[in-house]
Image 1 (cartoon, each protein chain N blue to C red):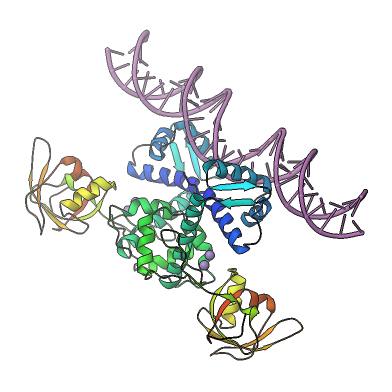
Image 2: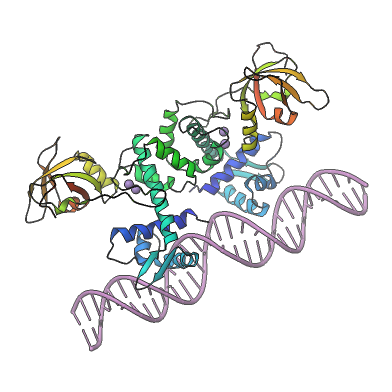
Length: 227
Length: 227
DNA sequence: TAATAAAATTAGGTTAACCTAACTATTAAA
DNA sequence: TTTAATAGTTAGGTTAACCTAATTTTATTA
Ligand SMILES: [Mn+2]
Ligand SMILES: [Mn+2]
Ligand SMILES: [Mn+2]
Ligand SMILES: [Mn+2]
């Protein structure tokens, strides 16, 4: 029996592990992520360990087992399919879809997910550029890096964002920067690493390093000097 | 704070009260409906009374207050809108929609409901012919009676079903009887009240009184002798 | 390295939502 | 009208999911 709470804990472990692959997933991390307190997490981890969905010890932190990863990836799949559906079919903006998908991802009907996935044309990526796992939990390949790693003169295309907050996404929308838009890095300020960008619709966009770190891009020129 | 459990209790009171208007809604009725035990219901009723959503005493049973009825009707509204959406937009059959809508009705997003209600064209009735309350909780008028009350020779149109089980709906589908289909009552068996019917696509359909009680119709001839 | 801060853990407690068993009040049958 | 069945209620208990406060580890840092 997987309750929506259990689904959320497994998804949290998955997302924290992916967010920073070098770090272990600690009870405190999970607690902050889910907005509960560490003892609550410890308690739940013990149950998930018993059920065979995670392993846990202080040094390696929490790790998903194969079964646990399957479940987590299925929730991620549902989440991203719903986001895409809300965006494409129901005309929600990319800053609105996440919150509603947080609820919809727990609806238990494979047939419903299959149906809406068909309606949106079986895409590989969601409105934030995140890959949609297939039914077997395999993620489509995508080669992306933060815009902040660009060098001057780089031409690149926006393939995603690593932050999904409404305020950040609305900020990008204001700058008229969206998924698949092409960017040119005009200048990089050596003092604070802020960027001057231009797009097809807008020139001389000023952007902080903080924001540029959250935008995921790919170089357009095959032999671009960007790292 | 309305949890989905609370929503389900209020909806249960609403539906039981409407199912049989002459009877009071007893704790046992609610318990059977929600598949829990009577003490669980008593406990929850006490909370709902304190919150001002219902009144309860042994003699009048459970009754929704105005606030409680508002909440219940809103859940019913969401349920029926989702059923219609699943049916019309996502091509589910009328026997499949109820179960998924039982989950979807608890998704908390007015904007989402508004959006899908728009997509399906703001209809007044769901795929089972049930009226969709408007935002103020007002139900569109519909004048229907059980097919079992028909007299011989009556021509009527199917406007709904009072049972929503998959097995019953699939049975009707097999008989090729659906919403808005026209029926002619060819004969009524005086012994067991079973009917012989014909439709545009099928003749001499035999139907038990039990089934006929669950089909809601309206006479087509303005001065029909049916009661 | 000793002191301090932070993280992990344990202990003990609350609330919601369930349950069974036992008892009381109603209703229906004999 | 007594008896038996059913419905309502109370008492007491469980589990999941949360909490705070206290304690023990583990890291930092002075
Ligand atoms: Mn999201
Ligand atoms: Mn996304
Ligand atoms: Mn229904
Ligand atoms: Mn319906």
